[in-house]
Length: 407
Image (cartoon, rainbow, N blue to C red; front, side):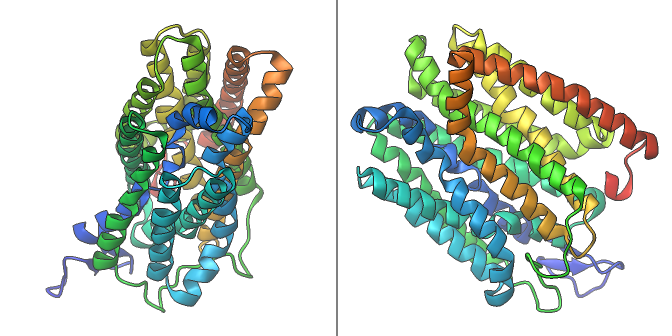
């Protein structure tokens, strides 16, 4: 090691930049708000009561519509970052999250709230792929897989805290739930102080000419789209299911979602170790847990069973599925196309989130009830588990022990 080491970054013999604690946790801090679009889901029943002229699908769309602007800005964020710098891009994104996120706390107009949610999504989209690619810039190999697990854990921490606070504020008024997005402002300050601009000789690549996406990455993007659609549908509909059944309040459901995201945080921290042990079989474990959680929720008649189902669906299964897809996409991409591959997966995730209320409405009409929707989702996931097992056997047969980049 050189004597000229700093607390912020050092370079190893291979040229990879290693982050010190301040830089590392400042980079991770931006992930605290990344998955907070659904933090206000428990407020949806109250919002529908105050806007009786709007359908349930329209109200649920307020939770998922940020994903549309996320998709657009994810595709543009790399290009924007190359022109104004990654640091400014993230900074503007956090500013949009703070402003767009909190605006519904002061208005009741559906069109204005819808527009503010699109602004929120634009903010997420500006730094969504950068939250992953900047970690890939500072980490590689096993360190990268572990860092991505930490990134997922930080998403869970932020989602848990914001969902819990939104549930508490819901006891005052549904408008107050949206004040949780004020968290974007202190995160912006911390990020701006401790994260340097990526130097010109170490560019953050965006969606540019010369980059390629393999069929495997497209498959991972489609898989992500399907499972985020299933998870988001569960997240936005479970408060209505529970309150209609009458065995718990919306605040109690919000608390369950907070607990679930805390469990997701733990699962995220452990992802690197679990992946090192299970390798590609971790995807099958994720889809299995998703299926079991959906079926458990379908037959639940108390908040404890629903809470356990929420943990399985919202937290553990999606940590395994989502982090695996991101990590595997970066493995399948060539060195010049990692950010593009990550962006494709993120686009799939966000399209799935936006589609969730409408897929729910369609499947519900097809199978007849919300309970049957959960059963259908569960059976689908169990079927996918068989496919994921076969794929893992095939991949592990070629490379039986995950090492190097595969770890």
